[in-house]
Each structure stands twice: as structure tokens, then as C-alpha cells.
Image 1 (cartoon, helix red, strand yellow):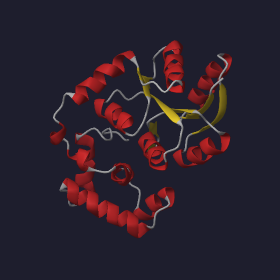
Image 2 (cartoon, rainbow, N blue to C red):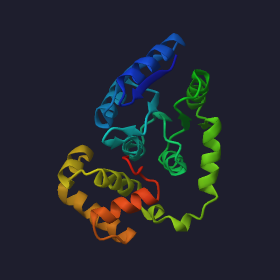
Image 3 (cartoon, helix red, strand yellow):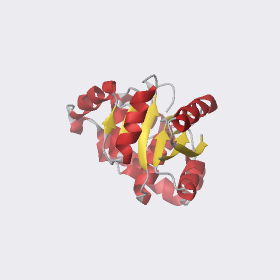
Length: 213
């Protein structure tokens, strides 16, 4: 029996996953639509595997992945998302996701991903492997986002979705001054002077979608 935690912003999706996984003998120890709440509960409930959507309304699942990586928590993550963006696949894997499955896949596909995660093995859905290869064969130097640290990538996602330094500081447990320093540094690295320019760059390099993160 695997102890699972679900993060998805659609309750009906979480309910369906819970029913499927429990019927297969797994234990769903908790669920949330909020990355901050999920982070606290996963540790408290002793989750072994996280099933994570990348699009969480006004936030991104990449934030949670970055925080898991920063804290070095022993929770293995399988991304379960609609996003077939090659850069989303690459970023999720770079931030420590051990599996990536597209919504619309079969239940057995998801179970295979969970079983692989429990064994510490990477698992990519059938269509996802090609997306990962596509990114790996691109010229890394052509993407300025590769110059950013995990924390800077986390902050850029929050900035371009409209969060203030104060809001970001509250969510990441940083002072507004520290957030402002990160923000200034990443904008310098990327060669942009304002937030609209930052948004355009993030969309162009597929860090976020043009209609939201």
C-alpha cells in the first residue's frame, strides 16, 4: 500500500483519483488545491508519493516541486497534468519529478507511474518521452532561463502571475526585501527591465502558457 497525496485544483478530479487509487489498494492520505497547504500536510501525513497537477489556478505546481527540492523532502512526485509543453516536462524533471503522465492517459498508465515512483524509477507516459527528447536536443544556450537558480525560477512564475513581493514573501517565507533582491537579480540575468517584458519572455520560453501558468 502506497501513501499518496493529491494536488489538483479541480475537486472532481481529486475525487475520481481518490476512488480509483483506493480501489487499487493505495491509501490517499490527503489532498489540496493549494501548494502551501499541501507542503505542510504531506509532511504531517507521511506521504510517500505526490500526484501533482502543474496548473493550479493562479499558481503553478512547479512552485511546489521547487520547494520539495529545496527542502530535500523524501517525497517522490508524479506530475499528472494536461500540459504537453516540452519545457514544462523538462522543468518538472529538472525540479525532481520522477514521473510525468498526461491527463487523458489510462488508469493503468498512472498506476505504472506510481509503482515506478515507489521503486525510485523514472516513468514518462508514452507521449511524454518524445517531449523530453525534444527539449534535450535543443540548444540549451538559446534559453536564458537556464541561467536561473531553482528559487529564481520559482519566483519568476509567481511574479508573472501578478503576485507582489509581499505576497511572494508570505508564501515562500521570505522577507519582501529578499524577494525584491531575487526579482532584481533574475531580471538582470534575463536582460529585461519591467514585468511585461518578463511575462513575454516567460511565455516565449514556455515557462508559462499565454493564457496562464
